[in-house]
Image 1 (cartoon, helix red, strand yellow):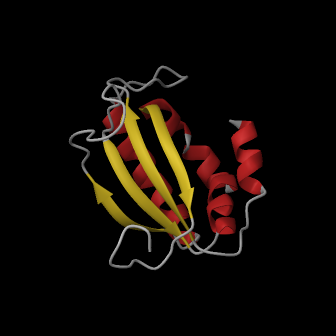
Image 2: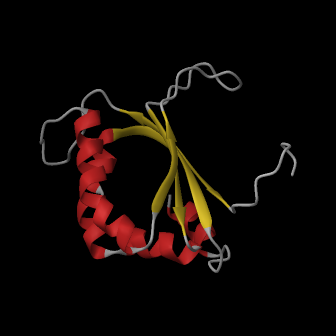
Length: 132
């Protein structure tokens, strides 16, 4: 939402960020122009076309996995795709989102995605325990 992005824009932009992505796809993509594709095909097009922009801002996928089962959480939530994207700064993420080339292809994501979660995190050193 616009409100969500307004809140995102006031967060510090001077440190690395990792974005946790959980994606649930439509069976059939919903394109405004009536183009036909599956949600998976539309999301794949989004991935291919956004990759150069993602790389231009220094983005890197640091983890991806295939969701299999919700151990803790709502059992009615289903995720088709899960990954973490790392950016060298919060500003780099915003640079990608507002890039005109990105704006020209984001319709593939919008057509593909039924629902999603995007959680901005500040990376920290991994330790031996959960709270470290």
